[in-house]
Image (spheres, rainbow, N blue to C red):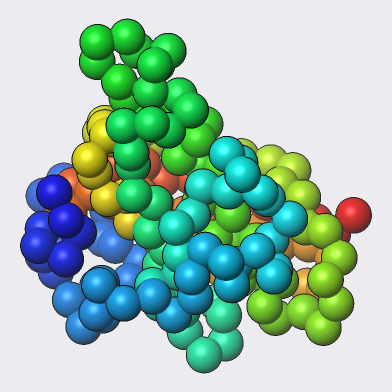
Length: 170
């Protein structure tokens, strides 16, 4: 299912509000492609989990990215055979990559930003091949050396996960 066809602006009943109201965003358009992301993120090959950044605010404090989940993603065959589900750790890493991009975009150098902590991770839904996982990130705390961000994952109007992540320059 295509994200552009399924995302609705109404909040999920008994779930959190999305960090970004995507109803006013063109979900079929990318502000930054996967290739452009590689100018700010060190991840390559199978470990770059974002297909692009759909939107970010002018101050790089909030953003939305896309991960198109494919039948040939590296985890599909083994997690779980016959019923593939995207591992939660991969979802959180994708959110951390978005938060790292937002942090890097606010800095004047290209020093490595490393993921150092996960807090309050909650998973409430499955992500399977064919899904478009929309990742939301919003800044909680930022200084040139460290950051804390909240991240969420959505498939259409289904809330999938949330976590608080922290990172630092190394």
